[in-house]
Length: 372
Image 1 (tube, one colour):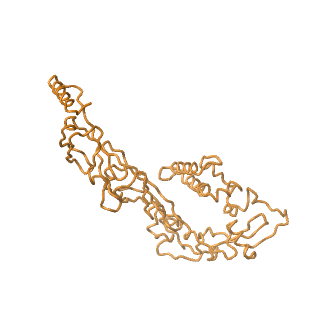
Image 2: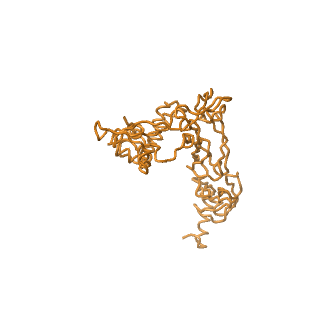
Image 3: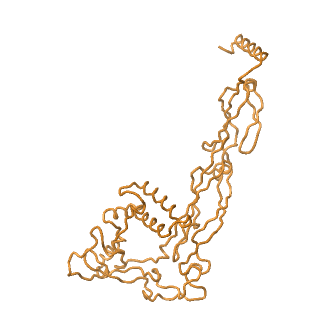
């Protein structure tokens, strides 16, 4: 019976692509073996997403209850693929005898007739991609960083080097498929009983297999390995960026290409600095006397503390630019600027003498036309 992939992911039929993707991520995280989950459940979740996450396969599944590939493997079933329309007068058909039609039927039912080229599990297999989340500081974002991460993942077996055989033993012709990589089986279709070629499950389509399976990986070609990687975070990386490291994901069973590793980078908010493009925005407080008369104030930058001259008559909220104290532009050596906003501190209390001086200042300002 075909599987209910919607139930596996915990979504309703008709769910959007985004909802399906979110449900998959949640279920994959829940059942991932590295997180203490059930490996079989994890496989089911991935199988469900391979169908529902693919528009063409999802359309087939929604219409027929299974994909065309599954229909061939299951020998018919739901959605009009099962049963023999000719009753008890079924007949045998060999895809190779159908000429050009063999390619058409093979696409629907997973067969290998009609001169269609075949690929082995090793040729088409690809390991799973992995992703880890990494939180970096604001300064690490500005200047870049190197981080060590430990990963427990499936890697190519170091004992057999991925060829599945115990070292010192032979790789021999598969006795099940006689070296062809495929076996024939009868499949019930809408046209009756047909002879279908399927990948040999004994050698996984290779046509050859290990005379003695590797004792380390038990003939899978991969083992769980705990490894430490040094991840290079480039300077100026954007918050939410994913870094792809090719070939550092999971190795597949029975050989093939290794998946990729993705580093999802998040930048921690900073109390002093805020990013806008390649510029860094900060604020500094100055006494109102400094704002009026000008003066030197100390300002924090990502490079450390520096002196900055406040011009005379600086207004509250005025912004000034400190050249090349911002974020690095990608692969270039050029940096953005630091935009400094001035906040003028007004005293809440003044002495009697200070009040008198301020009154004199105000009167003098009015006579000179400085104030309204």
